[in-house]
Amino acid sequence: MATLARARLSLVPPYERSSTPRLAHLGVGAFARAHLGVYADDLNRLGRPALIRAASLLSDRAERQMGPQDGLYTVAEREPGDDVTLRVVGSVTSVRTGAAAVFDAVSAPTTDLVTVTITESGYDVPPAPSDLDRPSPWVPEIIARALAHRRQTGVTPPIIASLDNLLGNGTILRQRVLEMAERLDPTLPAWIADEVTFPSSVVDRMVPAPTDDDRGDVEARLGLLDFAAVTAERYRSWIISAADALPPLAEVGVQVVTDVTPFERRKLWLLNGPHSAFAYCGLLAGCDTIASAVANTTVRSYAQTMIEDTLEVAHFPPFLDAARFAQEALHRFANPSLGHTCLQVGADGSRKLPQRLLPIVDARLAERLDTSRFAIVVALWIASAAGLEIQGGQLPAVADPEGASLRAAVIGGDLSKVVHVALGRTYDVVFRRLVVESLQNLVRDGMGLLGGAR
Image 1: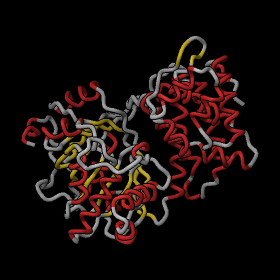
Image 2: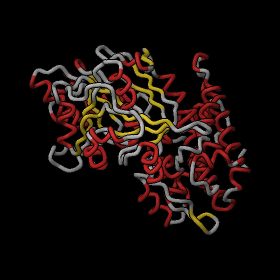
Image 3: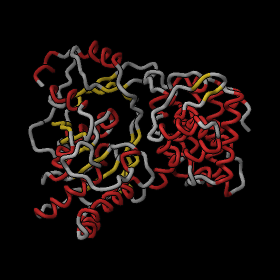
Image 4: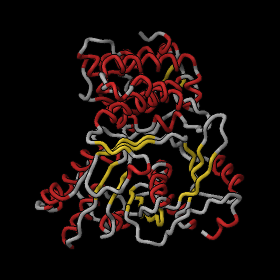
């Protein structure tokens, strides 16, 4: 904190940071810092108590970066043609790592709100409960244990909100916690169901993984080296289901609504889905970043048509202004200042695409409409994650939980088997055949696959 006096800008957070945190956050990645941390910073600047006790389950990167800085970090907002704006965020007062840290954050009697960003794969169900001392227990399991502790000690439980890109993320998190509670104590689920609220959220801000260049630019502007600095677009949005005892989030621009479902669908189908499409099509076109993929005429035309396919069957209520939202998303994707890489956006497709594409595929199949563009996106994900040879080469490899299984299936040379491993019975049989056909065409035509799509 004292080193901020040497900064070239007057950026010291203008509020007291020594009081007890009322919020706990699990998963201290770049997105949480640029999104939740900024909203909490806004609240603190209004005199509303919103300090955060943060914890990461596995990686100690955030603790190593933020601990020596008293939890302080810089958010750099970058928009084409505008000056970079810096904000030093003071809402995070501590960062710890490990299962015990997560347990302590949730079970602390002063914690009123717990927020979670553990990515889509963090909701996968483990085979059995683990000991708290094991190095890699499951976040919903630790939450269940912490809630059991709060019940035992008679402490009112916190609100627990997922901020991950999942339809009904609060409902899914609640279900996972209840499943673990049942394994731990048969009397616990009923208490959690009666006493704990799990509101769903829709969160939106593009936050690429920080680079050394980003940190160097912040250092040049700030006059201090900030290991925890993050870069983001100016746009940010948070929509959350109403719940008793929520902090006064509406005072800092959060939309508190009775039903987040239409907002979830709009974002997943018209922002996250096209984002994935740009990532995989961009890899095929040799693009490193999403912005360069948007600048590619063939890729952009392809994605634009896919968006039109989505709007044709989405039937969003008029108040969402879905077509305008989709076009604004394209404008945001084109921001070259962010450097959002295709590999980063394309990671974990096995967990993302069922949320982002499957409902649209089902809707189009129900209306007997073509789904080939969506099949091509799935085929590109499979090719990248599986290391499929395309015209004597391979796409850059995206990280994926199913990567090893897909690579093993490719060795056999049977594309139908590869698609079965990738999709199982999740997708309609007609659509699975389209994916196989798309893989065959991809192997033969490469980039020509996009130009020849129906």
